[in-house]
Image: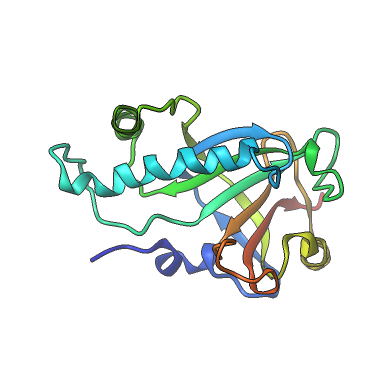
Length: 211
């Protein structure tokens, strides 16, 4: 049986188009940090994606090699995710994408430890003869957030964010974006194969109870 987080963790990967509150448990990811406009042709963001997927698939396909990972189970590589921020701004300024800083992530099953991660990086480095040193093992406890499924182009995300913040306030919460808690996007659709108006993106913002 192949485990698909989009199905087993529907509360995280398939929320409704109406905002909701969710408590996101600690999880392990592989991650790459960078900055700049993600839409630029040779952006650090596009480079980060080309680094993450080979490591993720090395772990998934380890079942075919000699390296046996304790508690391994076969899994669908989860969707790409991203933490986004800009210095001095609470939230996201979509008009100034050149100021973005980001962490690109792919969630890993619990059996992926730092040791397993280091093995995978070593494997892909040797196989592809490329530098994968920017990829890191990243444990993160996201905590309580407001989230919503955004359907449509990325540039129309502010409309969904406004709904999320209105709901958050009505439930007695306030925004808690800071240097360790981020604007979070999960890319359910493949942007290369999906019309902009049909793109599905989970948007998640950290919150706290209003004092």
